[in-house]
Length: 382
Image (cartoon, rainbow, N blue to C red; front, side):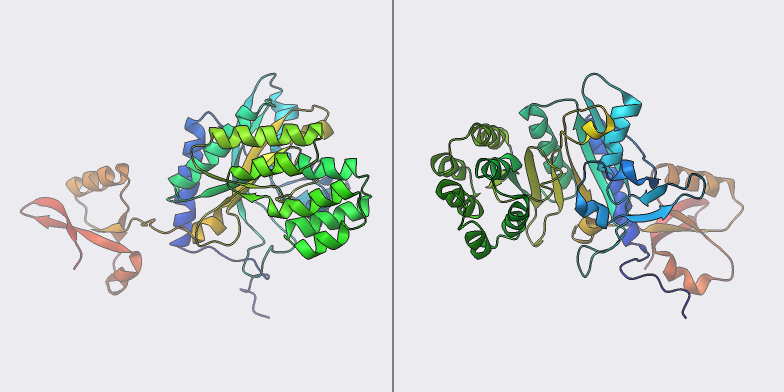
């Protein structure tokens, strides 16, 4: 057996890709910092009861589990950081007012989401706790757009929906749990024939509305169609009003998608997904999840977003990884001072170790330090 092989969908991240990921990580965390989001670092491992609180069956299946040798309790390797941040807000910070938190770290999945996906994504995100109004939803979506722009993708589009529309229709139509689950899967996959077949036995108005949801996708005008054709239920009216306020307040490209129900068991209100040209799947997901804190004994309204930094970095062009400066290994005070100054300015300066001159091209340097008339200078390597 080749002991250097890694498990399926687990890989080392090599330079320069690792440098690209780190560049984006630092840039995004600094963006979050200047917007008032405090950085937290939850542990990779904790008891499963805490990790899976309020998250539904999907996260349970994606979580690696093991027995703690000290307590004998079941522990899990986190598959999502958001429940951990909710725990921190509920039991460690104990703020009365608004808390803005950010995070970045590896998560582990039992199975990869796709054939080319990793089972160890790097999840980065930002969340607002303690505010239930549409203003915090707008702030978090605007922050997401700024984050994508900071990474060179100012061509992003954000699709927004609201889980209350589907939830209200199922409640009003007395849809049984199994049928609700099947309808949900069909709507998420935009399988209109399946939605049509599953809703055929439901009350006429509810069935019609469910069949209409996959078609309620597009620009702001979709909301007018939704108000016209969906049942006049209080929950639906409130949801459409929220979406209208979000689209009116957005300074970026927004689309409506009333069949976007990913994380339906987890989210409690507005949901959104970010897309960029050339990528078929969403590069970031988010929404409101007011129910998560309740399981920790302290219900706090919350909204936020997260993205897989490694997956996103692979599709971001235009990031030039800075190359280095080769320095001869000479005992010279002026040279040492120059090297220290260059490094303080952010330059990569690599000392040339003796005996490896023939492999200097492996160091990634495009400049070198040369002594000319008693003064050290930076020169381009031809």
